[in-house]
Length: 113
Length: 111
Image (cartoon, rainbow over the protein chains, first blue to last red):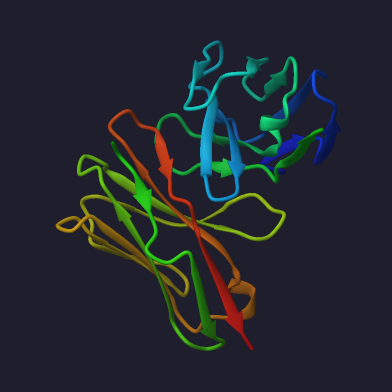
């Protein structure tokens, strides 16, 4: 039982490049989330998927797209990376029924030059 | 607007002492609260949670206290150990079911 797995752990991009962050969970959770974490800003919600087949914008969705590929996987795509997207990205999941604690992955540290 | 904030951004304690990390929240409709621990280079890890119909909940060496009158949440760590050094986040669940996170408090344990 690995929990929430994110890849890659580190990535450096040039401005304008694109990339996809991958996330998978093996806890049979319905809901999945993408957050970004910046110094002094706490965790901010980018997008979430309450259940398979649905996605919704969070607090800071601009510049990102998501895909809920199946119940296990939820990916985050940067189509044209900008230096403002330099951050640490966390994927999380939780049981929709209880709607309580989130389980987080180990994060992706992204630098956009 | 709603916010979850921490009174102290940094806290330094001696090994073996008790630690208290505080959190203020502004949304009186929030019905669920949670504490996370985040070690350097890792994702947030669940510590303990509490529903709004409770005032206190205890775990292993940790206790969460909820004071709804003043909208205050605290995390108490007994006999603090070097392994407790981390950033601690509180979060509240709003009416829409989303978790709103505070900025975090860094706990440093001196041997």
